[in-house]
Image (cartoon, rainbow, N blue to C red; front, side):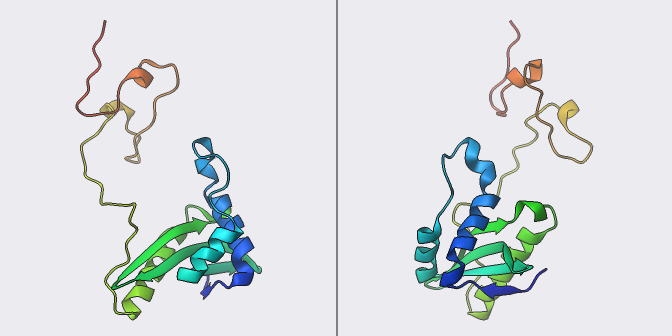
Length: 156
């Protein structure tokens, strides 16, 4: 992984642009940008952005903040061109290492809780060979099936 540095106030605009590029997938249900330069500067007043650069441009970042005896991390952003390389995991490890050095327990992202396995929600025929569940094609009979384990479709 690219070495990380602490972002400065001069980086706020570039950090906001990176976060907005990384969170662009949310645009279908969230209108507008994820953040802006002023919000990034407000975060910087409370915590720190760990930033990775490539050719002088920010490409990955994660926000870390000490909250009492706990560490918090969020706004994890990996440039879309670098997705799928394990860089998000590396950023989380860097955040957790920072908290360990500060004598804190593991960092926590408050919006994430361990997932409970409820069993497959799609018929076994809809599970791809790599173990991931394939979404049904629009208009197919399977597209009308509910994806909840306690709700069952009834043929008319």
